[in-house]
Image 1 (spheres, rainbow, N blue to C red):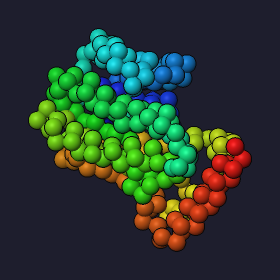
Image 2 (cartoon, helix red, strand yellow):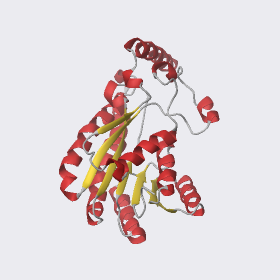
Image 3 (cartoon, helix red, strand yellow):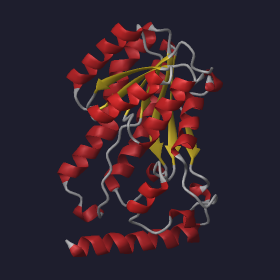
Image 4 (cartoon, rainbow, N blue to C red):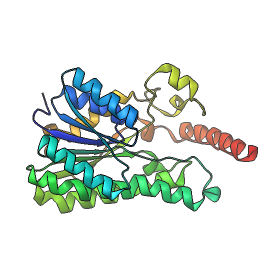
Length: 270
């Protein structure tokens, strides 16, 4: 098992990627810390992993709350003795025209996506150093490379690049690697969820592989960056987008134009 005797803390661990990553890490031998604000879902996931023979601990965590971070790390140290892997997958997203993005929304997205990641690194890195080093994986997005219809979200994901590279530089002597996983469009966990939440044209039109990623596929990439399989990789990013960022410009243009039409319709309806 690739994560035997490792302890991993995953923020946003009841989201699509976080949940899939927690399950995969547990199967690979890691003790998993389920860090989320959602107590019911967090406890349920921890119970699922423990019943299946794995090790999991739920900690209630708002990534923007330093007191909760301090308490989470205390619990991790008491329960497992150390920490080797940090996966930052908690995020906030808001679709809006740039001219109509209010500062409250902007600040909230920045607080969760960027400041929350900084707080995670600041709080967890010392314990990771004590534990002999490890790996930090920050969940980015191709929206941070190309832009999207959420200026705040795209800005934070681009900022995550600079934060992650700086962390890689400054934490290398502590034996800690830091990388970004640039994810493309991710499907929901069930076909029913996808059907119920469909609000935009098929994203497959702009993806070379003609489908969205399954959460488990993104989790596999997170596992690669978290494990010793990527022991010589730090300060870099791994793009997992089914070829979205390599698609012909006209395919992207057609989809973007349709998305813009939908967004404008929503704005007009308000």
